[in-house]
Length: 192
Image (cartoon, rainbow, N blue to C red; front, side):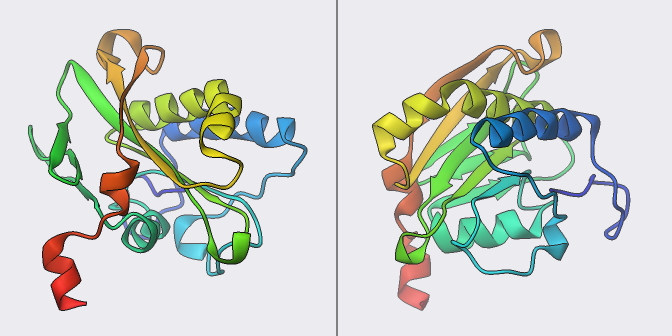
């Protein structure tokens, strides 16, 4: 779970839209026969693979998301800041910008070492985009499992159409960016 931006670095508040997203995730977890455990991003000090993890929010508000992106999807960069044009999802050489007519969400599943339980990432440019990403996952999880296998890695970019008018209800798949997301940027690979 991410913290609410602007409430202090140690605040234990969650935005309304992220709370809605949690309710949808809880339903999905229950449908799968599991029990949810809610953990704040800065309190999840454990490895990967022993439990399925659903990580919500952007890397600015969720340290765990930042770690997962750097480790499992090195071709993804999320920028955030005040003002228009500062909230950008970059995958490979493609950038997806938020504006008043659209917002984007990265919906991904990362396979963990030793065929462990996967990590699901829902990183939207806004709280509405987070909620839309969760709702897309809930509606399409069987289809995604058929297409990518039960534990395979995938990375999708979703577009939330006119979030001011339609909220999280109008979501469309923009691109499967799995190959680009897995590819380490050239500058990073030469310094590693």
